[in-house]
Amino acid sequence: MKKTGRLVIPRKTIYRLSIYLRCLARLKENGIGTVSSEALAKAAGVKPTQLRKDLAYFGTFGTRGLGYDVTELSKKIAEELGTSSLQPVILVGVGNLGLALLSYRGFEKEGFEIIAAFDAEPRRQRDKKIKQPVIGMEQLPEFIREHNVKMAILSVPAAVAQTVANSLVESGIMGILNFAPIVLTVPEDVMVNNVNLAIELENLSYFIQG
Amino acid sequence: MKKTGRLVIPRKTIYRLSIYLRCLARLKENGIGTVSSEALAKAAGVKPTQLRKDLAYFGTFGTRGLGYDVTELSKKIAEELGTSSLQPVILVGVGNLGLALLSYRGFEKEGFEIIAAFDAEPRRQRDKKIKQPVIGMEQLPEFIREHNVKMAILSVPAAVAQTVANSLVESGIMGILNFAPIVLTVPEDVMVNNVNLAIELENLSYFIQG
DNA sequence: AATTTCTTGTGAAATTTTTCACGAACGCTT
DNA sequence: AAGCGTTCGTGAAAAATTTCACAAGAAATT
Ligand SMILES: NC(=O)c1ccc[n+]([C@@H]2O[C@H](COP(=O)([O-])OP(=O)(O)OC[C@H]3O[C@@H](n4cnc5c(N)ncnc54)[C@H](O)[C@@H]3O)[C@@H](O)[C@H]2O)c1
Ligand SMILES: NC(=O)c1ccc[n+]([C@@H]2O[C@H](COP(=O)([O-])OP(=O)(O)OC[C@H]3O[C@@H](n4cnc5c(N)ncnc54)[C@H](O)[C@@H]3O)[C@@H](O)[C@H]2O)c1
Image (cartoon, rainbow over the protein chains, first blue to last red):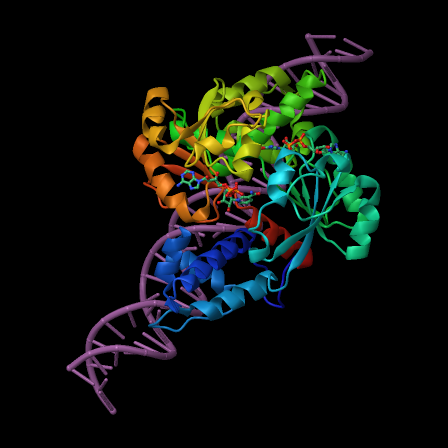
């Protein structure tokens, strides 16, 4: 699970590193060259000590009395996260949600490219304004192996999500971003991140009423 | 922040309660009346002791030697989460993603209803197959107050997300489900849950390569 | 070049969250 | 109704995460 020869970096830290990276990108856009832990932490919505602790897990990049070089720190975090190179991703389930994701132009900028989409009824999606090919499920295993794809976005109906996930895993997929509102069962070495909007709403609802 | 007169329930527990609720719903559909902490925990992807500890925060619902009554436990969790009644939600930003969310029929079942959508250019969305009205932004404050809406889904471009969030907050919104890839600044008593797909992908990518 | 001012890096402390271990309670069987 | 097997509830222990406090390093200033 760990990355460098050093320490195991906590899960939550990894998540925050992604946030820092995006805040740094914004600073760079605004022509800002140097940033203190206080300023960056504020932009990211965390405490300065937490930011510094997070960075300390994999190196020391700051200059005392001055702060961090925006470009350099970006580079170091991207390196640590392994986002330096573009990653191929596939999407399975070209319905309402899948189409929205396919037409989103924001992933490339962040290091990911949805290179193809798959659906049980690929023909239906012909007329849409998306650039990716929509391919039938029977070609899924071959495609994954040929293009050495390791990550998939799963946006099929809940009823078939486990079945589809099984065939993704069988074909070599190691990470699944799952939108179906069910808990997927996968081998230990396969990672699933769930996006469950109903749960997010429920969570909001609890804390604003409490 | 706390709910009953009892204890402060951890954030993560609240999140897991939502998951348990969905697993229980599935069990009920399958005609299962009783479930052990072991079985339910497995379905939810957690350890049995964690499930029991989570429930212990707000009561004792099980029968020793037997397990939990599926219907009763569902009811208790829903009650604790405050999901017993249907909650009105609005959506702002009827673009690719917003449209997909509006046409999703899965929220009602989970206790939420998107009662209206707002967009800077409401006319453009006329022809779509959604049942909710798409309204101009100028009517937003009045609508929120009149319908006493407390939660909003924000799916506008990142560049305007903070501005729109400000006016949501000003109008009385207390919880925002934010899809724009920026960190929103809001008053302390307003809660924001972020859904950032690029970060989820980055996270997956880190852990499958590490 | 000495001093002041600022900000990092980090061991230790505090807090939060998870896991463990086991007594207690209940149903079922005999 | 006694005994057996199961499974819950929970205080205590362990692990993970966050926060604190401050020494140390670097730039800016005098
Ligand atoms: N649309 C949303 O806003 C939204 C929100 C939250 C969660 N979700 C979840 O995301 C998933 C997709 O939602 P949606 O609204 O896009 O649904 P949808 O019905 O519009 O699309 C599902 C797509 O999956 C395809 N499909 C069906 N079975 C398949 C199979 N076995 N293999 C490959 N493809 C198959 C269908 O042809 C269809 O194109 C669902 O699980 C849903 O619960 C959607
Ligand atoms: N589409 C996706 O799959 C996807 C994925 C991840 C993140 N996001 C994020 O979600 C947000 C929406 O994405 P999208 O693809 O739907 O974008 P989009 O451009 O298709 O839609 C944005 C909508 O917001 C409206 N809008 C613009 N300014 C507004 C304002 N000031 N007030 C009200 N409405 C306004 C536009 O008219 C448009 O209808 C973006 O922040 C994007 O980064 C989208």
